Amino acid sequence: MTSLRMMIVGAFMGLLLLPTLALAVAVDENPLADPALEQQVQDISKTLRCLVCQNQSIEDSNSDLAKDLRNVVRERVAAGDNGDQVRAYMVDRYGEWVLMSPPVSQRTYVLWLGPLALVLVGLFAIIVMMRRRAADGTQIDIALSDEDKARAKALLKGNDE
Image 1 (cartoon, rainbow, N blue to C red):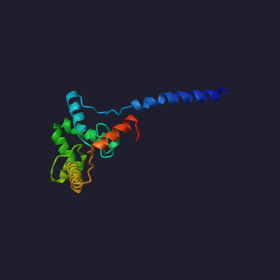
Image 2 (image 1 turned 90 degrees about the vertical axis):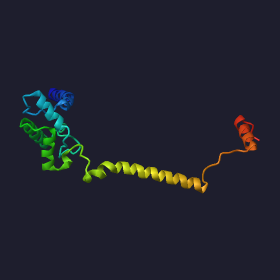
Image 3 (image 1 turned 45 degrees about the vertical axis):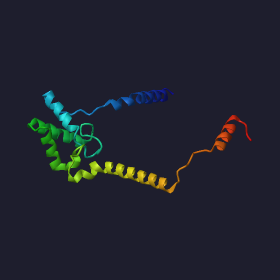
Image 4 (image 1 turned 180 degrees about the vertical axis):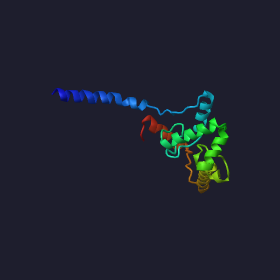
């Protein structure tokens, strides 16, 4: 009976400690000694997409590839590259998809202008539908005669005739 009780207490303690695993954060082993350069590495890493996670930056991702890419960024910054040079280096190797916010170019016009075009097409369709309805006379005419108004007042007062 005591071993069962100890197993239950152990399982309960394990469940209590389980949420603390969510507080675990991946820390890079080789941060740069200069805090300003390390901050630059973090800023650049926020602009590069994790190739595994796809919707996370390499700064936010805990994947092994993101860790490797952060180390590459760190090496490039330590070698004297600025943010634009590091991003160009990554684009040369992985394509523009590695950028969290791709630049506006002929290849990305659809990406940037597509949503605006869809909104404009939708507005145009709504305007056309409204004009057709007005031309067809399908609008509801709410003008009431004096007799109808009197009857409506009587109904509202409760004098049903």
